[in-house]
Image 1 (cartoon, helix red, strand yellow):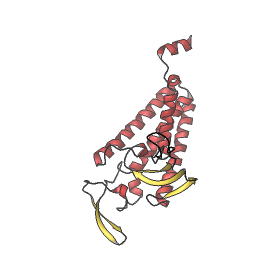
Image 2 (image 1 turned 45 degrees about the vertical axis):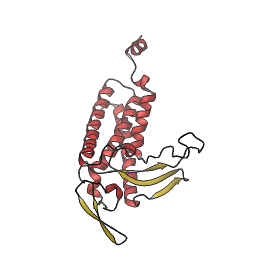
Image 3 (image 1 turned 90 degrees about the horizontal axis):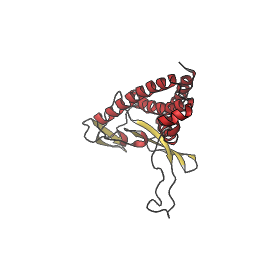
Image 4 (image 1 turned 180 degrees about the horizontal axis):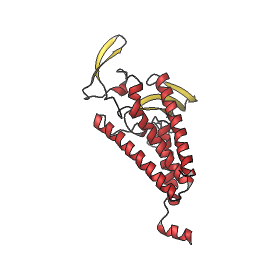
Length: 222
């Protein structure tokens, strides 16, 4: 393995450790919906879970969309690893490889939640994020001494939800057109989401450097 790939996979390992530590801490210590200030009121911990993609984005709540998303993540991870190794052999810059390492770490971090968390944490039938209408999986929530039936999400390998916890509580100024008073960024996210987003943003910003056109490559070689 090349020295550059060692740096990349070291970065991936560090990000995965941070991502999983924060998720396990939040899931073990917080109640669903619980918030705690990190930096004043503008940056807080807010524990939720979501069955979909980064920042709570979903494309369906049934077993097929969830399983499809997990399989897509698994295939994407395999492709990114293959691409990293191939580009390292071609002599790609360390910066280029590290950027794709960020995306790899993020995709892997969220996949680990889906793969294993259902085996290590007990599903609470009273948590709203575990409710899926039409699933056919019956459960009973006991809340304040009352029992009421609920339909629960599917559980198992690649079917677990992703733990999110970071939230910016910053609003647009009230005078701002259309969006005045609304949250600037309402999504709740995790370290894995941040890694993916950072990698993608860097690719967009540096795309001319990372993917030079043929003429530019020829000029640089003259």
